[in-house]
Image (cartoon, rainbow, N blue to C red; front, side, top):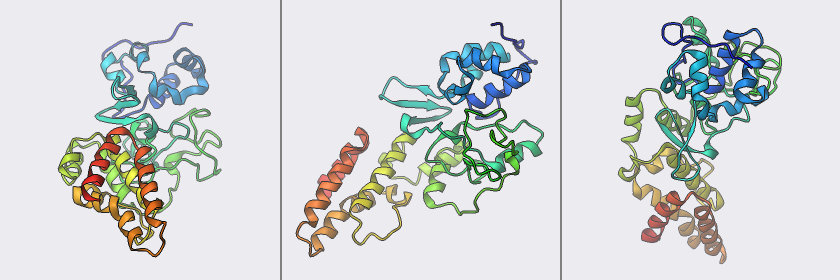
Length: 304
């Protein structure tokens, strides 16, 4: 089929800052034609697979021609695969892994969308909102939602006809009420890692243990996940609160958390506790990505 396009230059349909490909493609389709499903089929093959648009970097030329943008500008809407390491993905200034991205639901910040509307710009979906570990919009600090506050149904890309509305009941999501929950230290850490301001990102990284400052965002998330898993599997004396990002601000604090289950097990009256703690710690490290496992094993060997 032929696709309506815009000419390059001043007539271009602009990509919004940090906008995701599904959001941009849907806005563009609604702008170019009264039958957006035809455009979506031309781009996606199946208009119901809008969530997958975020991975279609090879379609940058198609998107550039249709929108009037240059290819480099259009490519910013995508999450791109890296050749090394395996499973690594990059978008904007960030590097994560496949398992950090969740397109099975559509996450939005009602506050961010409302600010778009107030500013007179089209409300749109931001790329970082696709991260499973991100619970708040990095720029506004406001909660992300993945369910409509009116009908209660899960927000998805499959039935999305407007990035700022519920696909089930049509509720304008900039009017939605998000749960009034305070940000945890971990939420603040993740939001700072993916903040649009590089100064904010650099300031948060400067507080990390020196060896970790240059790590990718995905590796830092996996490091925190592994440490929390070690903490949960044998939580004697550790309390109910999960380890926060302050743990990774020094090698010594990482080592203390890593070795705490073994030390607490040794002080318990259970003869098998040390064996259980050792096996559980080893299992947690074995399931961690290789660079994280190697780093933690080095601390475990030195400090145990």
